[in-house]
Image 1 (tube, rainbow, N blue to C red):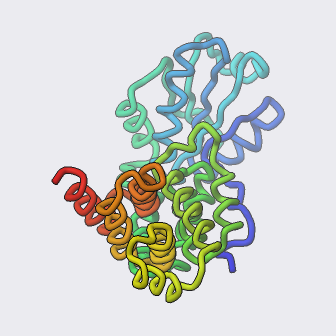
Image 2 (image 1 turned 180 degrees about the horizontal axis):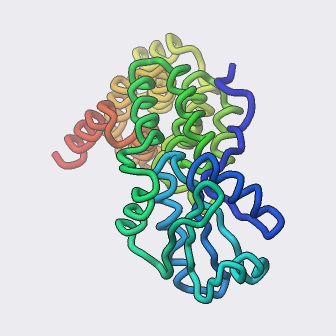
Length: 299
């Protein structure tokens, strides 16, 4: 089972263009909504400062405006026609014509104000609203509804790490390991420590571990027969976590820590921390588990 069978549609809010592509990417596209053209060059330090700020502001506008980037070293003709003599330079096009612009790296509030002069108040933006609604649906158990909204976010912003992580986690929850791996693979390698991605990856690892475990009743029987069987208790905790019973899973690992903190090279505590990563810092199971762990470690 999979929520979606392919990657999100390619409808980026930010893209690069060329002299040949300028008419389609800027002139034609600006008939639908304003398009900002960022003229830059690889050697330009202020250009590198501007890039993350303007990209963030454009994405926050949620589709009301698009950003097109043009490397003037490779494509000098358009910049020359517009009389651009210093970079970074940003020119706003609307209805096929340049209507406004600025030069130099600017703080985020100035760029947001520039965009709002073109399109009006941005507010939280549809992407932010969709992310919030998707989170609410996921917490209410409507995984399909949440996935539909996360997919819509990724259609607008294919590099949204929170949405990628959330989609991966949803696929873990329905047992679709391959689907989860596909969404995690869509994230840049240098962003692997992003909280949403790290949490989804931890949940995926737990799911893989749980696949090799025995029947839950058998594990419970082993622990009941021999409470000192730490491996059986450890496996029981993994099985419980895989079934969504995080509170009992935490209890079993804390019990191992109480009985033998050094077992398996402090493995019970390390596994509990992995649970916290998988559940997320604000999850009630994480909060309760941290209290239980602190009570044992600092008593």
